Amino acid sequence: MVDQGSALAVLGNHEFNAICYATRVSAKYVRPHSEKNTHQHTAFLREFAFGSTPHREAIEWFRTLPVFLDLDQLGVVHACWCQDSFDTLRPVMKSDGSLSGDSHRAIQPTELPYLPCNRADPERSGVSSAQAAVVHRQGRDTKI
Image 1 (cartoon, rainbow, N blue to C red):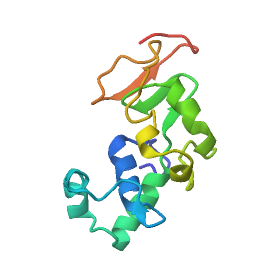
Image 2 (cartoon, one colour):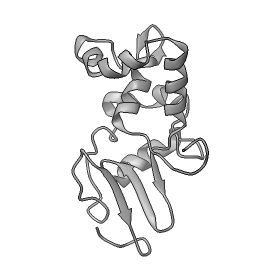
Image 3 (spheres, helix red, strand yellow):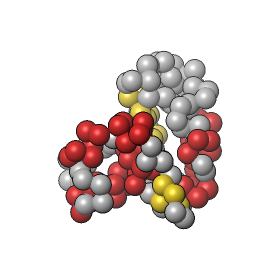
């Protein structure tokens, strides 16, 4: 649906973690292939064998997803609307809102305020971290 232009989607923590798990910087993966991390990816890796063509295609598609959508009357993000996080990520975001290919070089994953959000915007947040935050606003200042 996204590829056909009839739906929008945003990057979530699972997709972000899959990208980091598959991305090397020098000789190390951005998300180490520890027992814990591999276990967390078991279901995904069962469907998309690591390094296979379908796996590479899935990771490349994940890379096209924007971190958030800030539409006129609607803001969409996975889990938490955190302006500080968005401002931190903007230098490594492409114009479509997705992370650039070099984002892993600019920000270390352990320092990303996106995972988890350090300071939720009280004007736009209020959902649990297990939910997608969808904010309907009349203008820019509507609370949810």
